[in-house]
Amino acid sequence: MYISFGEAETFLRNCKDAVIITHRNPDGDCIGAGFGLKDILQQLGIRSRVVCHDDFPERFDFLTNVGAGEDFEPQTVIAVDVADPSLMGKYQEIYGKRVQLCIDHHVSNKNYAEKTLLRADASATCEVIYQLAESMGLDISRHCAMCLYTGIATDTGCFRFDCTTYRTHEAVADIMKKFDINFARINRYMFDVKSEGRIKLESMLNGMMELYLGGKLCIIAVTNEIMEKVGIDSSELEGFANLTLQLEKTEIGIFIRERENDFKCSFRSSGDINVSEICQQLGGGGHAKASGCNMAGTLDEVKTKMIETVREALC
Ligand SMILES: [Mn+2]
Image 1 (cartoon, helix red, strand yellow):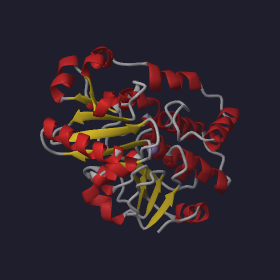
Image 2: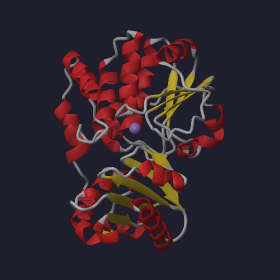
Image 3: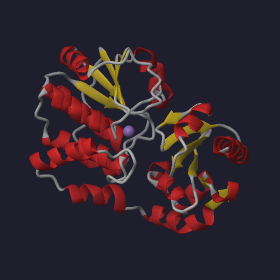
Image 4: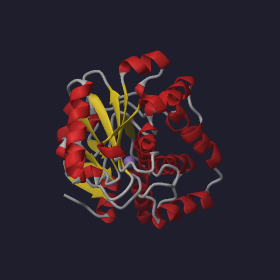
């Protein structure tokens, strides 16, 4: 059931001992939303714990160093930025069927929770949480402000992507007005600072771009072998997907990364093609301009399937 800000407020004010689930391959938005909501609950006198299938990458230490939360048997299950319970990884089995509240901004949200606060026009789940705090009349903490800023900045590619609206800027303007935070420093760590392995991989990138369908489709695939060679793990591949759209004629970019048992495929659209629809055909989902799906098989099989599906979508 989709709910309003008012209903979400009532839920939050009356909940107890909450576990907050983020998605696997955690990014700035789910980490910011998880830890930001934890702060808000704390303000309301409610204890909570943030969980994730994967470790939080080190560059988010400035948000996660408050600790994930106490150990307790949760009475409330909340998911943030999780469009589909399968994205919870190992937590799907434990909590997937009993999520009471989901806060999200993915148009492809599977409506799996008892109550869903969905704002598909929001740039980030952190923007939704900012609006929620506003409507609750809460003065958020400085740490919460850093969490929400980071989620909004990362999901908008530092306010460049299509999902950025005047409301996004208003939210961030308000945060900037109220808090003395080194935003430039956050941006530097989110967008500029890279590991040596990542720099090595980026220098290999030009040779790894594969063009199909007359250049309208660009695929970059990073295998475990390549990651091992340059010495990075998949948590450092954030932001790579956008590099598939650098060529002017490219309409769809797909960034494929190998995982243990399958391939994670991130789709980007530079124009009018809705990649969320393409990904939903492949069992995934996301946003119109940025979506993803997971595919099993060999890399060649996965690529063939991608090319065929995109070919049909381009017709
Ligand atoms: Mn998000």
